[in-house]
Amino acid sequence: MKTVFSPLHNRRSVKTELDGGLLIEPHEKPSRANTILARVQDQGLGDVLEPDEFGLEPVKRVHSADYVEFLARCWQDWLAAGKPGEAIPAVWCGRGMRARVPKDIDGRLGFYSFAAETSISDGTWEAACTSANVALTAQKLVAGGERAAFALCRPPGHHAHADLFGGYCFFNNAAIVAQAFRDQGAERVAVLDVDFHHGNGTQAIFYQRQDVLTLSLHGDPDLVFPHFLGFEDETGEGAGEGYNLNIVYPPGTPYSVWNQGLETACQRIAEYQPDALVVALGVDTFEHDPISFFKLKSSDYLSLGQRIAQLGLPTVFTMEGGYDVEAIGVNAVNVLQGFEH
Ligand code: Q9C
Ligand code: ZN
Image (cartoon, rainbow, N blue to C red; front, side, top):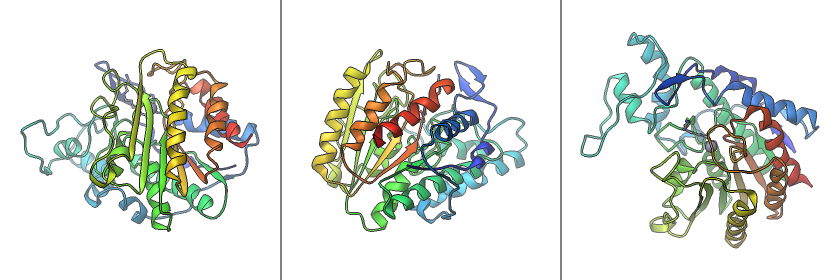
């Protein structure tokens, strides 16, 4: 399978992540993608291509124009306001307050985010645009007849809503790919999210639609990020009722249990008969992931890839989370090798 990758992801290298009352070195760091690329090359997975340039039009099919404009200008506006550190949201529209867009950059950072761990600095905008182009290039390969393609996206995307960043995500690459398939004539698309965290952005973007089936297997949001979405009683709304599936698990979940939800999700996908599949591929389900609590082993990712392949669908993988950098290459590429064998 072909991989799409750009070294421009390195332009996103913030120094800070707010965690436990400290500004730590971010978990979502450049070495993640570079380590996966090295494993792709080592294993001879297939050609590695640079992304094409798609512009902002396919991004704006999913994200609001004002949000895109905010991200484009955020860092300059932050600097122009004379702020000394990285841009970090610290105020939100709480219950009962006015949901209007403030002029001030602190206000706008809060308006367009849902969490404070995702700092912004020079290069974040360029990397986020490149990540979307990486995803769209993989989509183009699959739309052009490839059985599957791997979008080695960084920054990740699945937490980003139409007009909210957070959880290390800015543009929802998986959603952008699903929408691109629809815009090119696919009638139904499924997005299967196997990252440890709930794919809240993807769910929200398609929640009222039946043309994109969203499914996510993840840690119980009562216990873990994103906390305010991802429960099993969220099944879709209006025309989208019945077209969202969440499966939540407790701490310590091994593959033998996780796998049962994967089976349920795959059966639902098969019944839906989509024209294409997008896999939001996070490997933070790994037993040694520093911020997660599942217990998947490296060899389990081969089985995961095999099960997805059995669906027999044109498939785009978009890279999402995974924070044990030492194992991230093996784990991510195991999914793709399992898929091919
Ligand atoms: N103590 C993705 O996997 N919370 N995002 C981190 C660390 C945010 C994860 C808390 C986790 C976001 C794409
Ligand atoms: Zn995650």
